[in-house]
Image (cartoon, rainbow, N blue to C red; front, side, top):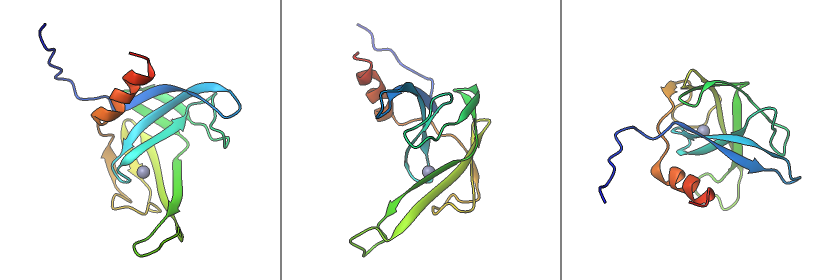
Length: 133
Ligand SMILES: [Zn+2]
């Protein structure tokens, strides 16, 4: 059987069904953040995350726009600390397929606007597994 060669780059956003702690089912969109070098996921309205956050989605998965801005924070262990002493901040607008990093970001891309990059292969493989394929 011939191998299929895929010339298209990976998608920049994937939509996945998610289930909240309280059993509500909704949609999350995931994109790769080159500032944090990790995946960020946001609940798409009318769905909301467990903390009540939800975003309006317009455009397409190939050229998405979300509103309002996305603020991602997590406990941060600066070098030499054995417990989290700071909060790491990533704050973005995604408009027209571009990530606009606001100046309160704590990574190197703060203040810059960059295209959403293609998702890594491992993210897409997980997608296939979650579909039971
Ligand atoms: Zn980020």
